[in-house]
Amino acid sequence: MAWHSSYHLGLRQKQCHSTDFEVHRNWLAITHSLPLSQWYYEATSEWTLDYPPFFAWFEYVLSHVAKLFDREMLNVRNLNYSSSRTVLFQRLSVICADGLFIYAVHECCKCIDGKKASKELTEKPKFILSVLLLWNFGLIVVDHIHFQYNGFLLGLMLLSIARLFQKRDLEGAILFAVLLHFKHIFLYVAPAYGIYLLRSYCFTANKPDGSVRWNSFSLARAASLGLIVFIVSAVSLGPFLALNQLPQVFSRLFPFKRGLCHAYWAPNFWALYNAVDKLLSLIGLQLKLLDPNKIPKASMTSGLVQQFEHTVLPTVTPLATFICTLLAILPSVFCLWFKPQGPKGFLRCLILCALSAFMFGWHVHEKAILLAILPMSLLSVGKAGDASIFLILSTTGHYSLFPLLFTAPELPIKILLMLLFTVYSISSLKMLFRNEKPLFNWMEKVYLLGLGPLEICCELIFPLTSWQPRYPFTPLLLTSVYCAVGIAYAWFRLHVSVLTNPAARRTKKQ
Image (tube, rainbow, N blue to C red):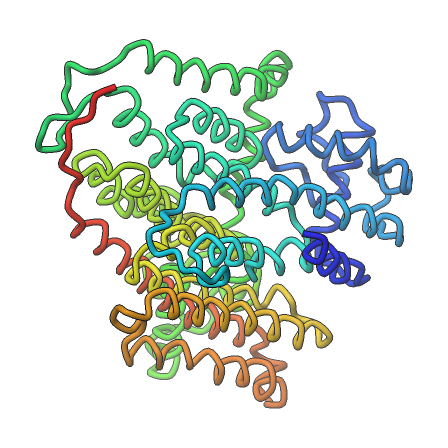
C-alpha cells in the first residue's frame, strides 16, 4: 500500500482546502481547549460541533498529536487558521485513519465467493473488489482533496458488514453501535441491522419454507444485543446525561432548521421536486399567474440552506420527508424478514435503506451517496445485474460530487480521476461477466454518455454566457437534476431485484 499512501499524500499537500478543513480544525480546538461541559455549547465559529460524542473524543485524541505540529491551530479564537503545519497534520491524520478502511477492505474481500476466480490475478473478483473500494473516486475526492474522515467511518461500516458475513454477529453489532456514536448519519441503515439481527440471530431456526420458527426465539441473544446498545450508548452519552446536556447534544445532531436541501442540492427526489417547482414558477410568471413580489427572494437556486417555502408545489416538512423515507425502505425491510437471503439479503437491504434515505431524507448532503456506493461494490462482483446497477449508481453518484471541487486547478484532476475509476470499473466488470448479457442497454449507455456534454456545458460554455452573473447556481441545478435521474433509476432497479429474488428455502438450526 506504499504507492497508495504516497499518491494520496501528493494530493493532500495542496494548499487550497474546503470549509470542512476549518470545521475539523475548530473541533480540534474545542475538544482540546475547553472542558467537556462546553463542547456542545461553544459557538465562536459558525462550524459548531455537531457530530456524536465518539467523534468528539476522536478529535480530542487527534488534538494531542496536533499540538506537536502547531499549537495555534488549537486556539478556538483562531478562526480560519491554516498554517502549513496545520494542513500537513490534517492531511496526515486522514492517511493514518485510512488504516482501518484498508483492513476493512481486506476483511470484505474474504467474504467474496471465489467461484468465478480466474487464473489471472487482475481478473479475480477479490482483486477487482479491492480496487473498487481502495481507489473509490468518491473517497479520494471527499477525504483526500476536499477533506473529511469518511474512509475511517465507512471502514467501520464495512468491517461490521464483513463480521456479519463471517457469522460473527455480536462483533458486527458492536461495531455498528460504535459507528452510530461516531456519526449519526448511519442511522439511515439501522433498520437493516435491527431486522437482520432479530431475524437471523435472535431467532435460531427457520421452517422448511423459509419462514421464521417463532418458538426458536432466544431471549438471551436478544438481551445480549440490547446490552451492547445500552453499554455503547451509556459510554457515549452518559457524561452528557450526567451534565443534563442531552437536549443540547441532540439539538446539534438534528438541526431541522437548516432546511430541506443542502447549499448544493443532493441529487435526490427533492432536487427533482425543487426543479419542477422552479419550472412551474417561471411558467406562472410568464403567464402572469403569479405575483413576482410574492415569490421568496431566497429561492432554492441561490445556494442558501435556510428554511424556505416552495412557490407552487406544497412546502416539504421534516415530517413529510420522514414518512417518505419510511415508506421507501419498507419493501426492502419486509423482504429481509419474510424472504431471508442471509448476509447478502441484509447487504441489499442496507444499500436500499441508505439510498432511500438519500432520496427522501431531510437536508441530505451529496456526500451521503457513498453510504450506498461502497457497500454496492461488494454485490457488483457477484452478479451481472448487480454490476450494472453499481456502475450506473457509482458513475452518476461520483459525478454528482464534481461541484465539491470548483477551482480551475482541480478541474483536470477530478476529470482524470473520475475517468480512471470509471473506465476501470466498467472494463473489469465487463471482463468478469463477459459470458453473460451486456451490462448496459442502449438507454443506459445514452444516459451515462450524456455526462460528458453536461460537464462541457457546465464548466466551459455556461461561464461564458450572459446568464452566469444572473443565475450562477444553474450548473449546480443541472448537475443535481441530471444525476438525480440516474440515482433514482438505480434505486428503482435495486428495489425490483430485491422484490423479485426468491427466498432461501432451507431449515436453519443453531
